[in-house]
Image 1 (tube, rainbow, N blue to C red):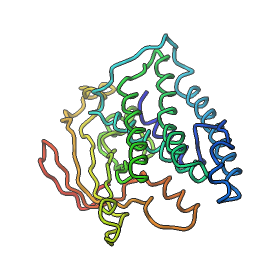
Image 2: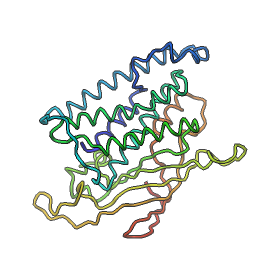
Image 3: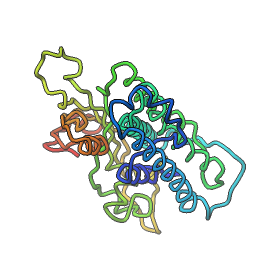
Image 4: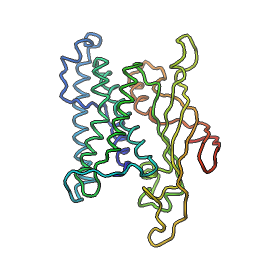
Length: 313
């Protein structure tokens, strides 16, 4: 299944509520060490669990009806799609798994769950969610499960859990940005007919970033702002098809675009490290923290070699 639909689900989940994979978690076992610190933790955990279970079940039912119900089913099978879209979709899987796990962790911590349990329970939400989607793909004759997708999902989960266990922080954070391109005009069926569809479908306009917090590795006495990051981006250009570009569309010849990868160096703002005492604001900053803030950027590719952007997004 094209990855754009999964990004859509991530956005819907991010702004719909607080999630956790463990809707039937044992409240007594996880909040004994924290319930005395806040009288509302038990209510919060119950609310998170009920919301998580409802959202998970509802999204799976809705996803199946929207993308799978009208296509023939088959025995479970795998496909090899590792080289498609110059690996943009695989990076997207990693980023999505990372952020859903991060939101799951923050939700459980907000609910009073002890740190390590929140890391393992909430941090695996992205892996569980996207693995369910791969199972749907595997039983669909139209698509098929992807080993590369599963590996990318596990990588995103591992990066979140590993950092949280090692540093109790996320000094390396994945981000996403988008700009419209000319390519969607040539393949609107595949790359999107309007701005919203193009955000989800046009890999040429998507950029995935790894933002590193410089201040996180400096001495505590240093005044360098921890919210200011250096950011490394990856994107791709010239793609009118998954593996190669077609020669024509609806009987009309298409331009011969060169397909190539792009690498970026820029600055970024980590919204999750902006200090606030308001828990609602803090949760919101975490939920929208996957958006890369526009900054000047240097681009490196094999066509232009080095190219500067006054403002890239």
